[in-house]
Image 1 (cartoon, rainbow, N blue to C red):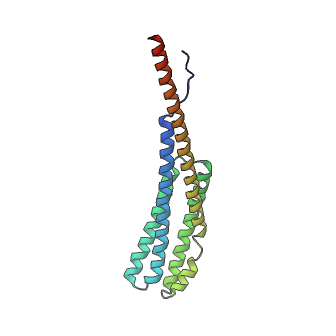
Image 2 (image 1 turned 90 degrees about the vertical axis):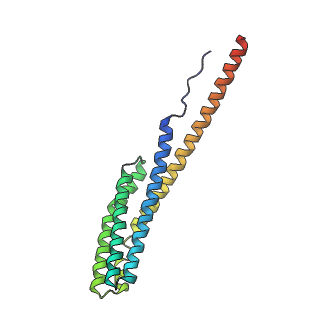
Amino acid sequence: LHVKRHSFPTRRSSDLVLSTVAAHKKVAVVDSKFSTAIQEWKNVLLRGHDPKELDRYWTAHLKEMKAVQDGLRELATMNLDSSAKETLSKLQRSLPVVGEAYQKAFDEFKSMNFDPTIGDKAARGKDRESGKLMVELKELLSKAEAETSAAASKDASKATLWALLVMVAGAVIGMAGG
């Protein structure tokens, strides 16, 4: 009996699914850190007239921004397609610009007697491009996760069909031999 050789799902297809899921999870965590950093900036503006609160929220803002940058560096080591890599690269380049804008806004806020409208005006829109890139990256990784999961599911279905065919053929051959 000649059985056509067929490629069954391998560890590689499951690894691909797992790596796309991990990348999608990582970008979700990074996005959450970015949102938290922006919230901490707003806390600086709202509560920064008190020196303890100013230090507390500014430190928290800087910590979250660092976590965003660290998360993006970790994401860059993951298995991403070319469009996701390109978007990630743009996002990584935009973050230092955002950080500088927040630092400038923070300095203006302090120099203008902790006037929140001055600090808000100085930072307004500076994180918009990074936010758009973050959304784009999340969408790309979500799409990649769905595609790799669908491909792995299709491969698993094919493997199941082939396994059933081989078992039936074996049973028929066994019965014919008996």
